[in-house]
Image (cartoon, rainbow, N blue to C red; front, side, top):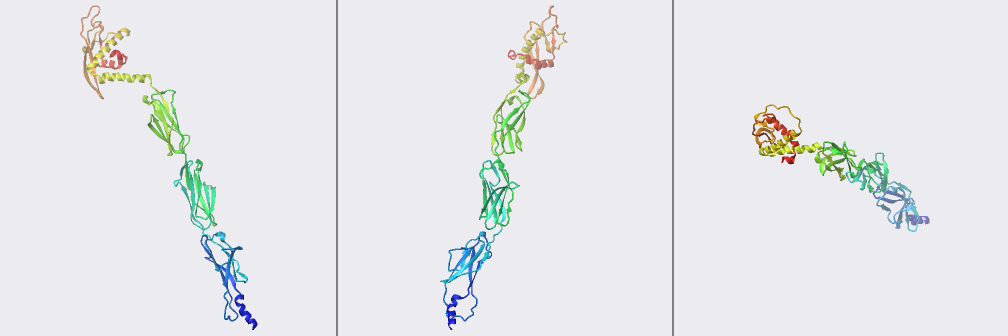
Amino acid sequence: MLLRLLLLICAPLCEPTVLFVTVSPSPPIEGNSMTLACNTWTPPQTLDPPPQKLEVQRQFCFYKDGLALGLGWDSLPELRIPTVWREDSGSYWCEAKMTSLKVIRSPRVQINVHSIPISKVSLEIQPPDGHLMVGEKLVLACSVTGGTGEITFFWYKGSLGLKLDMKTQLSLKAKFEIPAVRESDSEQYYCAAENGYGPRLSELVNITVRIPVSRPVLILRAPKPDALVGNVVELFCEAQRGSPPILYHFYHENVSLGSSSAPFGGGVSFNHSLMAEHSGNYSCEANNGQGAQRSAVVTLNITVPTEDRKEPLTSGVIGVLLGILSPTAIAPLFCCWLKRKRGRLSARDPPRSPPRPAPQQTTYINSQALKQLQPVYENVNVVSGDEVYSLVYCTQQERPATAEEPSGTNIEDKDSSAIYYRLMADLTDVDYEDAM
């Protein structure tokens, strides 16, 4: 009877309780919450239930790898962890105790926090077109569309994969920057990302670093030391630095002569045929889209041959005589020239053979007592452009021949066409001031 009474008194305190830990969700996923529960299990009673049961207050505590979690002992049999990561995987158990009684421990349970593999790795650049000037900042942003847990990002340069940097962080995007790019940074770039399931790679992205052109140098190359009218001079322009393609422009007194392109860099040549008006200052300009640069000025003096300088004067005088002056003004000038010409011929020309009988229209008498010449002119109806040519006849009255000077001994016959030909051929021998 006494033993039965003791069992009834101690039953609430001495019942064989079993603890075990459960987790939800199962398995837990990185980045999500996880809830631990300390569950108790009591076997079925072998004795009759007591007529009255004492209320017992229990407390619980959760552990991971020997370390207490949360605030320690608590009356709640559950513990919620807001966010778990892969490093939260480990061995878990719980303990339960009643007031002033021994502690009951659950068996250990291994909980593994699972992660989601990353998906679709991409590399974004700033500036978006991938074209930069030397000294500008380049930003390479590597991102993934999915994946959990800590992600390790890698950046590589070139198709062979020169490793530039590595970052591990709890995010889906990471950045790598080159503060000031150089010409050698022109290359292909890609990135990779992994979270424990192996790395995944992005596509290649091209980066082009452009260099502005330097101030070009202009060189003039002539076939002879002296630049003459009619020569071909070579204008060579070259910028020592600058990303291709480079477009060159050539100028004479700031007037464009032409242009030429260098698709792969370097200099270009431009051939220029010289004329008298091409003396002056020459320059060239280089431009590769990053700003134009103009060369220093090179001065070229063109030599005009003597015969070339004389020809315009002769043509000008003839033009004035035949194209501008009226026939009335030409006739006295021609007669004056004829007198001076005959005088020069009589002084320096050797004796001539007796001339042929001269036509009556163009009879000249070589006499010391010449009367005033009477010019006669008429149009020939020969038109060249705006010019009208005229025939001019110089006549004088004939006096009787003397014994010392037989008639017809110095008669010089010139038909109208011969007179015009001599005007064209010998007018250059006339002193312009004397003729005027």
